Length: 166
Image 1 (cartoon, rainbow, N blue to C red):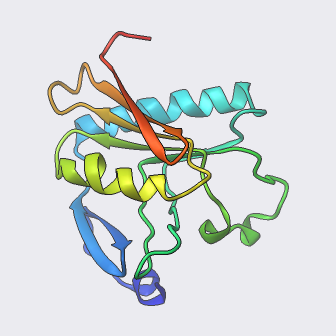
Image 2 (image 1 turned 180 degrees about the horizontal axis):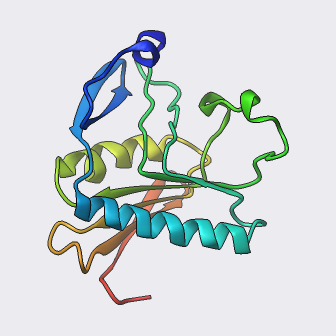
Image 3 (image 1 turned 90 degrees about the vertical axis):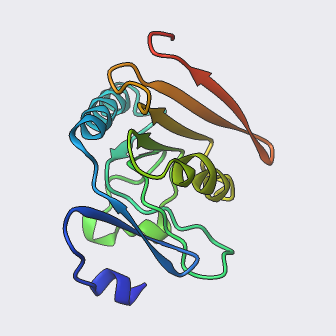
């Protein structure tokens, strides 16, 4: 992890450690970035209006998954937290000590197996994560589908919400 944190990576890519191995994906393209930014702003607005439900939303985080054979720290596109002590000085915050309530991946291009298979398993093994969302714009980024994984005991209940549904 220290080597990963200190590494100089080539720009234009996103890097994650999964089971101690480096995974590389292309940086978001403009359609993916637009969906990502839209949802981030909506969730941030919701958190500001309902701090009793969510009190921190970020587009840059790490989720440390414990009990894996190597360091496993996926970096979701958006992470939403509840009950964080936001009065603590920023210098005392560490991703290792924080665990989100909701994680989101935005999928337009790239490897769908990462978001639809690998991360489904990883996020289920993090007890604090109650929902994992995939905003799927592969068919048409103007009309994405929201795939919601909601924790039900030790499994996910999966529902898809087509564009325009509530």
